[in-house]
Image (tube, rainbow, N blue to C red; front, top):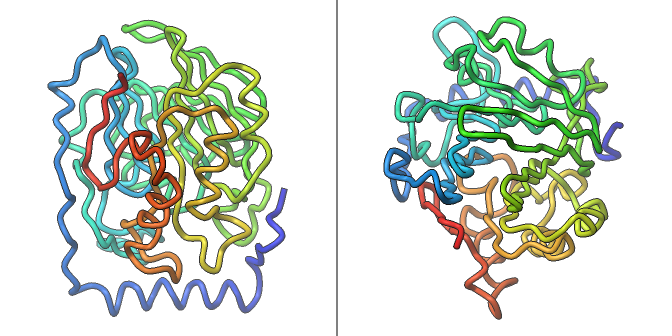
Length: 303
């Protein structure tokens, strides 16, 4: 499906490449701010659910001993990789962990093929022991990596993954977005996911505009933690939800705690740096205890 606000051809494509060049040329000397905190995954218990926001849509989760990484993007820039440089946006805030800081990752979860969620430079750092769950028609992008176990999931499909720590079920569901990586591959899929293990459930929203699909998830049981995008809505409201809409969709899914992501990392839209998190907190002012975390690098332990 193609987003109604999407236009990847012609003059738009030329403007995008001009933007990437501008981001490299103008931003190359700007310093990157450090993350607010540094997670310590080696100290996390395998008997609990623990999650840390590393930046943008990258979340490290220990799900009762199964280690999951969502949309891994850990280097200073995203975009087109050329010899010796990456042509594209530079981080505003550093990743809370580097690739070398990560524990052994059992599962990499990819929501769609956009550069800010599907970073080839990061993905090349993993070995063949890591399982990858990715949307339909995106496996080919991983053909030069060392991954051996790659599963494409279409909407409503479930994959059971068995690790040394046990089994986890992963459901792909529809979100309101688009999956193309460049102008000519609008056929690529895009997913949200629900992870279930030991009767606990985590929702990863990936990228999405306002969608009724979250409400449909409630029939399968409550969500313990909803990881929801809250940024890049101005002017991209047809592809990205506002903070208030993120809370609405998490509520419709029956989520207890909400982790806001997809803000404070890259300059991809026009809203101010702190606007998304401030609006998110205001939307939950009556129940602030539901906010899992607020800053890059913070860690949340599910009660």
